[in-house]
Image (cartoon, rainbow over all chains, first blue to last red; front, side):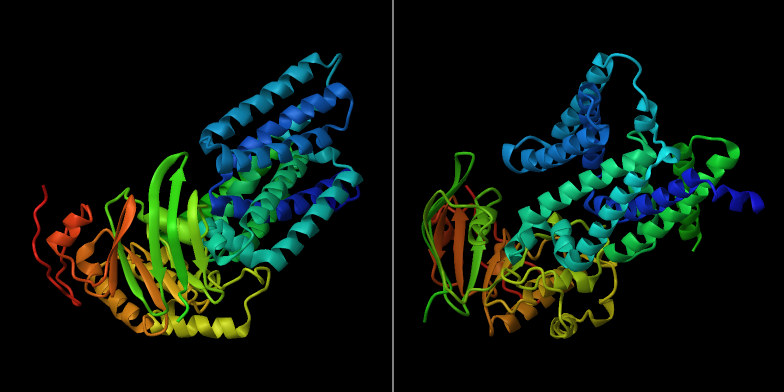
Length: 269
Length: 246
């Protein structure tokens, strides 16, 4: 127990816990939306496309997360647009964007002279190096997402559930579609810092799928998913520390165990 | 009496494939228009044009200032596993063009209960839609179409994927609703449609009117409407004359 208290005297650990909490709130809410809308694959495309922006930013000497953010938002809008207007099939356009983004990232990282620090951190997450500025960004987006969901829950729900009907009912469907695509992109990029490109998607899908087993409405899925996500990431972080394992992978593993427990409980109920 | 909706020589196309050409349609208050036609004949396209989901490539659409449309889409376009309760589905049908951001008020929540009573689903208000049967789900979507107090109710193939009991119920509901609003019902199934409607029209590229609800072989032939007559064993029931296909 003393060891646990001592752990909290380290600022890096306090930052890591705060980052895990904030990321859980963001990923829990946004993830519930993605899972309900069945756009997990889209989110995967956005995540991997952002690596392209990261690579370019590296090469140019810009902050990598700005590059990733720009690429993520552009690809989110691009996927929305191409399926609406250009008549390209959605899964194909996602797959093209997915691999193109990764390819651009790899090329530019390769072209960048010298050692590329933190590359592994971007791929697998690096929660123990979270800085105050990252926390402020996470907090700002978490608050913004909560406010938006609080005030616009009904129209967001209506558009996600039945877009065509929402359009007939007079909701500005395109505005809501593009705005939510942008927020999904920002939420993903900010969570990359904690989970890494390769693992971040699971933070958006596992808690939401687990909450989906029991919750009756999207609102409750969101709440349940935030709670499970907090539980899983704090537990996972502790485990990672004590067993000296990579934090991102351990968090995913903990979340999966929680999911399996809930699934089995439901089966026997 | 001002018509609710008037289509004059309306044509519509997808990527230059003309699906509808020179369609004329007039809907007055308290009309009950049945639209029949083969699959691929343009029934859904016509609805999309009326619902503003597709811009026509030609012709005029005149809508009355007072027009409020309630829409029941084909149920197979809906994701049945979406985490949403019956009440949330119905509330999403509030007419929202000028107030889409507003939260539902108490009056609207009371309306939900009344509508659920009307379709005998009062105990299902907080149930997720995934737990409903096909017929129950159709009734919920009917409530969603009705919560905005429409004066024109548009139904797209309401009798597919539902049990026969619901079908009989549906026609009972529609009879009641027709006292208060005009109804436009689209179906590929002539047998059921003809027992209720006041006017029938066939969409097959163009739109052909028939002033009453009696469909005869001659009518179908002269309008080039390749439709099969189907009859069902539940009330309301009407068996129409056999007709032979060439």
